[in-house]
Image 1 (cartoon, rainbow, N blue to C red):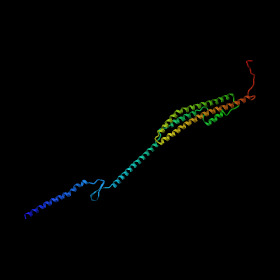
Image 2 (image 1 turned 60 degrees about the vertical axis):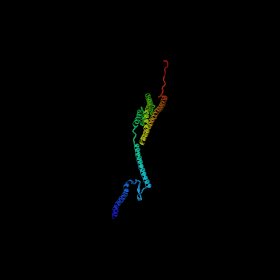
Image 3 (image 1 turned 90 degrees about the vertical axis):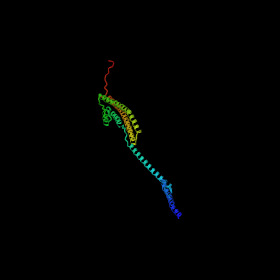
Image 4 (image 1 turned 30 degrees about the vertical axis):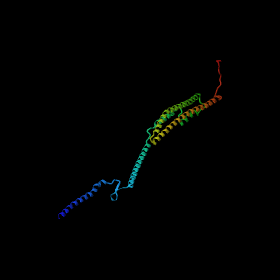
Length: 266
């Protein structure tokens, strides 16, 4: 009886030890569980395994690359639009240089020289009146004094025409320096133009300069032609006047009257 009782008392202690060992064994995975956290590119498959999906990862990278490409294209498009606006602003920029004042001064100077033409001006009505008076109306009954006065007037017209032509030539020659300076400035402005408007305006002013030079050339040609015309008119009128005087000299009674001449005081 006594031995049997002792064995019965030791059994609860062994059972408690085994129970504690089993509890520690079951609790160990719970302590190690936080250390096995899956990475961002993985997920838990069946039965707690970590699985990596390369297809999904490649699709995500491709989507990000396409998004970045679209953003770059939008940035490039905005840059192109900004450049177009900048070019339009340059094309609308006006030329800061203007040669109009200098060209107008050159034209006015030449015109003033033409307006100062002596005796017969560059006017159609004045030319008709003066030619009718001094060149076209020769009277056979005019006195010698009147003939001499008319001849002197025609000579003065010819000399004045030659002087006017030389004055116009001198004035046009004086415009060469200013025209050369303006041409140099306009060429520099055209080469340094920042837009189409400035280049066009520089080209237009160069054409205006060329027109002014052509006007000077026309003035010189006109003045020389006027001088030549006056000289030819004087010759023609002098020839006609000589014919009239010869006829009057040879007309009996009214022309030459013979008389006695004394020579050597005899």
